[in-house]
Amino acid sequence: MAKKYRVTLTRLERNELEQLLSAGKADVRRLSHARILMKSDESKWGPMWLDSDIADALDVSVATVERVRRRFVEEGLETALSPYRQPRRTYQRKLDGDQEAKLIAIACSTPPEGHGRWSLRMIADKMVELEFVDELSHETVRQTLKKTSSSLI
Image (cartoon, rainbow, N blue to C red; front, top):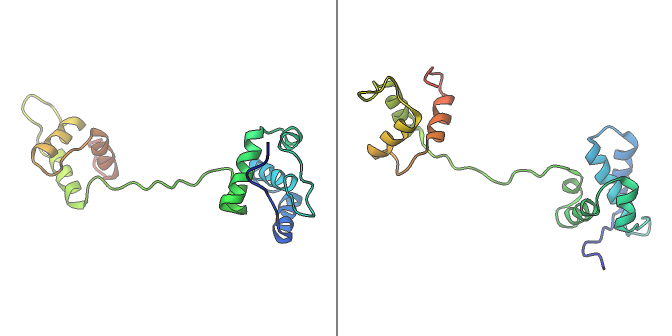
C-alpha cells in the first residue's frame, strides 16, 4: 500500500535530529520519534525504510511509525517529536465572581431545618432555586468551595 504521508527532511531538520540523537539527553519517546523520522526520510540523504522495518528495528508498532509520519507532515517537526498531545480544550467557567460569592454566602449560612450542615447537592439546588444560575452540579460547588480558604470542604 502506498504511503499517504511521506517524510522528506530538509538538511536543517536532519541536522537538528542528529544533534538530538547524539546528545541522548531527552525523553525516550522523543528520541524514538526522532529515530522514526530519520529512518523514514525520503530525501536524497535519507534511508527511506519501510514502516514495518522501522517498527522492528526500533521496537515500536507500525501504527506509531504511521502516526509520527502523519504528525510530521501535518503539524511539523516539533509536534512530531513530542510524544504528548497538547490539550486543545479550554473550559468555560461555570460561575462568575458574583455567583461564587453568593455560593459561598449560602455555604456559610445556617443550613435548612433538619440538617446539621449544607451538603454540596443542597447548595447547588439552593443556587438554582434562588435563580442565581440555571443549573449547577454538586461538583462545581465542590471545586468552587475548594478554591476558597474556608473549612467547609
